View 1 (cartoon, rainbow, N blue to C red):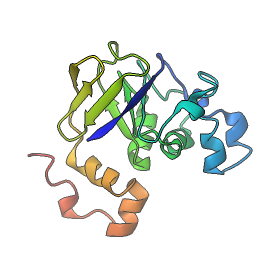
View 2 (cartoon, helix red, strand yellow):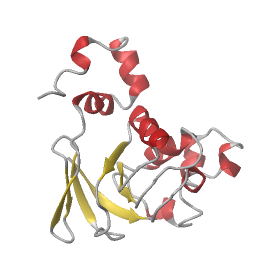
View 3 (cartoon, helix red, strand yellow):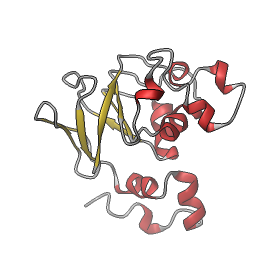
Length: 172
């Protein structure tokens, strides 16, 4: 179960809004990059963000380039999950590989600052502030295993590849 405060954004948040290329091309230092996360949309974002908070957005979150630094920067900054109505496919895949939860649900009723609880396995987003529950697709067992290890690379290093039991449980 994940629990945190929301930082709400709109539709079509592209990877340059998540981490501007003007920083990405100057440094690979994740602390430095995380301090600039989302700053074109909210210059105070990195100062307001607390570890475990959520980015909440509308449609097409992570559109634009295939910059894998975008989910890495959000995760490094302390974002526990991104909750959006839809994701650009490459951002979604990069999030899973990075160990950043990407949750698809109707975000229209969630406001900036709301307190959320997210059950990835059960497929439920609870807006504690408003007292509402939003259904989302439960996270497949294989993805939960990747998250448990901190991302795809740590999973592969620990398990030396995929094993038959990797995808077991998705049918349950």
